[in-house]
Length: 273
Image 1 (tube, rainbow, N blue to C red):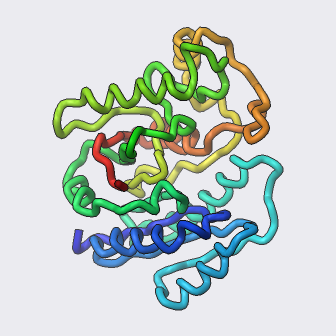
Image 2 (cartoon, one colour; image 1 turned 45 degrees about the horizontal axis):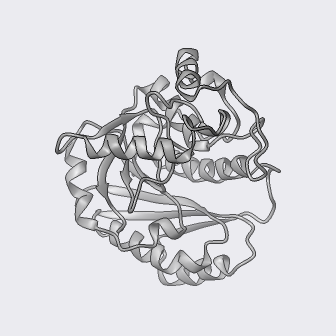
């Protein structure tokens, strides 16, 4: 990947305890490329995240730091979508420079040790446009996941013995474990804290933290309802307002599939150990 440039980006809010290690991992990822840029959207925090980022920027001028001092919405997923779209707009502006970009979280998921040797082999493959990875001890990001037959947000169906976090987690782990060697798992949406994207396939997409029934074929929602044995629910979980919120990654990936025929895939390999 010595002739390729990449933009590594994401939102930061109350990530102070993890930033040093995450930024160290980013530098290791960046070393795989001819050049790289770090784009971070900082949101209002109550820890030392901002001071850490400012100090890091003094040491590494590859960091482009955007500081937001005002909450944009009363809804968490709307704020995260705004932050990711801000990063995405930077990538779109310089799309001719960055054929790839990485969207990642800056929390405990990515502050583990990175197995950097996993990444290079995937850039020679053409069977993915968005690629996320498994995590240890289990795949955790069920909120962003859309995969047959769990096409939609599991939070918008009854949390019963047929449809809850652990049921879907066990399902995705089984699918990943049963993959033939070298193959990737096809899905509609997956993030799991870290994903690599081919920029050209996502130029016409955007993140949206709202509940979007229009981006998913109705038959998929019907099939999810059948396996969940539940009708759609608009439940207020406190941290998630079901009537107004969904994971921002679902819309981002679904729109890219519709507009650009993007291939969303999951690798069974564990990048952060």
